[in-house]
Length: 242
Image: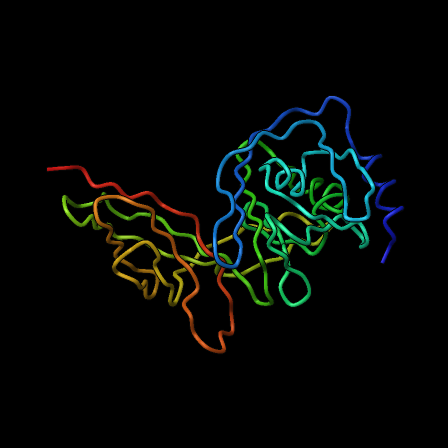
């Protein structure tokens, strides 16, 4: 792997003059909880002190820049071939599980800062409204996506039909190639959280909450799962009083 000094030259050279501010949506999913879910502005540049103690000024229009913009506590290593998060908000992940990112649901085979600027941004630069997912990844990991299919029905327990999907084909973007499209398919089995009705089968689920609350989908606790599922976004349920 290249040493950190080469990364330092690359990233400092890549901060553009007069880059435009953007607003992107960032979700940060740890093993047991959602650390952040919201919109952040990306300025021209952001400061970062790596685990080596070196201080950097970096182009903010990157997946790492979006993660830093959340304000979460980060430990970022510069000992690899790019700047790589080792811990987010104190949650350490490396080796068999690691902090990874997706841009508009697509995963990459390169790092989140200098390698993104060299290989990802030319094909699919971050823009207003870009969706960034940072998550603790494992091998054969794919995200879940949940949407409401009907208005909530109440009062009392609030019930709403939901659809839980995963990617039909989980694609990697390789530097120098066109940005791949994504397509969704019903998830075979998912656990509904925040709901008293706990399962979605073949993508179909009925979310039920008492009055109001958030509902999301997670990987069910099954032994020897061949494919791992990253927690979905949350949908807010609130049934009108009648």
